[in-house]
Image (cartoon, rainbow, N blue to C red; front, side):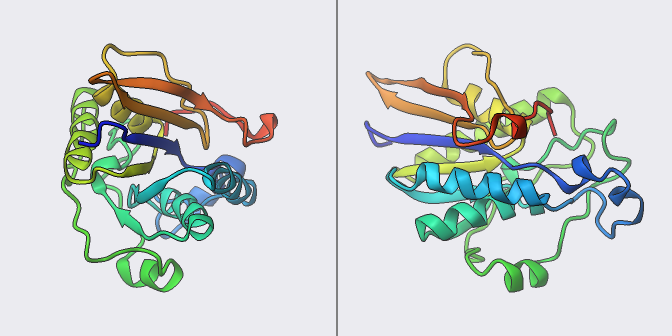
Length: 214
């Protein structure tokens, strides 16, 4: 672990099914919606916000909305994207009637060439998943990542993984503002992880910052 390491944690931008709920009824991958138009703008704003930081690695949940968010940031930072299923959505049976099917690798490889397919996820969640399990796996995955990658990293996930990864590092359970395209900053200093930025959305128009947990 780098004594000066910073972990940035972001949530994906706005989802198409939040803007158009009827999309779900005819979608090929109903549990894997893309970003809405304003969600793409939010992701671009996030990339601009992080442009002057020293991020070396970007890890993203394998869901389309997180990949698209990470892609916009990666384009600005000129970095690759590593897909980590340990950051994935909460496989909550109240939200999903079955294990979610996500977009296949051939599609993702064609549309998002910055994905590094040599990287393999360290954790594969199983459906269904309790709240306890999702908090455990998101807390554990961030510890595994900082053990292997000592440079500054960015994690792009979901509301639940923003909470779980932050709490996996920072002592206690500080209240986190896990709004759409939020940004959390955690820094290792004085032999402990410290919360330096809590759900900041200053890079967004305030009307686009919406609280939800999936």
